[in-house]
Length: 373
Image 1: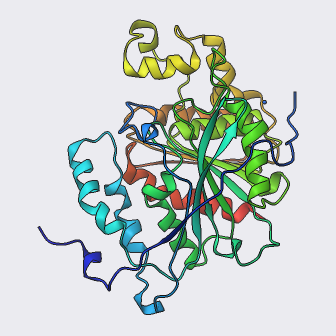
Image 2: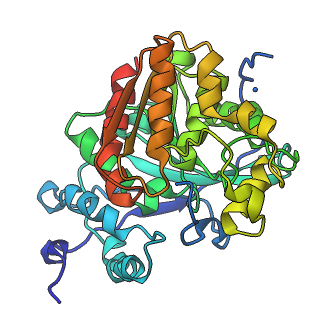
Image 3: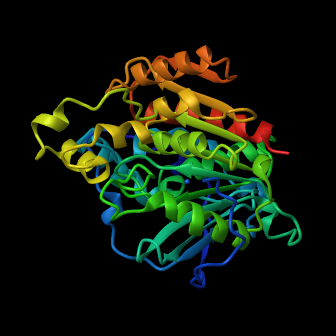
């Protein structure tokens, strides 16, 4: 087997990682709230062992010529993501992981900080990771726009780290394609980023009352709706659209890739409550599921009545999405069009897989970058 091309580069320079102090809960200004890949989960990344909070940044001691182009790594990230596609992908991931951890570092000075925030609402700590722009540490007085990026089912807050999306962001920043803004991913588990029907997982309430205020104070987020946006993939796309449509006063823009948009309750929920999909959805929407609760939280239903004035909307989906989410995406487009709500929608060739997300993630990043002040 031939070696990957990046094995023939100069000697690797390692990232420098430092433990981060544990944050305290309840910090930050309270937001003003008006009177709040769906499919078989892949390798369960959310069940990972506990790890110490860390911050990673490039080692700038290497000469510029020795800092290899991040594009090589970004090109590999679709194949290296552990997904439900089975042993072949897992084998590739394990094969290349040692090399990924020892790649040479480059001119960009951005870093990723991962930590957790204790939540009184959830009675537990919630991990998160934040991608910080290069000037976050050099300009201590600057405040930054913030993009909340919600992961899909079976993933976790380290999505931007382990998938290679961080490297993609750094590539785009080095090319001048992105402004300086924060990208924050909380661990959403399998809860679709809403308050569960049984009230045991009040995740949406946690986001609004604890997480957003904490993050925006700790990381010097710029105030105001125009400086706050939300995005997501698959289950995270559902969560992003749900939160933006239910609380449009909080966000200037929303985007989603292959969002888990389903117009009606899936038939399998009423016939096989023991199936994996039924257990996941049942833990959120009720078991048996509550049709009224389903509609109350559905982005498709919210889009019909929400005040979307001033909210910029982007979403796309593959025309061969494995879970049929193209139907929901098309329905969303029709609803918004009927309301004359400006939006950007694309139905691209592709499936519900890492290759599709890797190809189209730059579009949503540039969409938000253009809109940030």
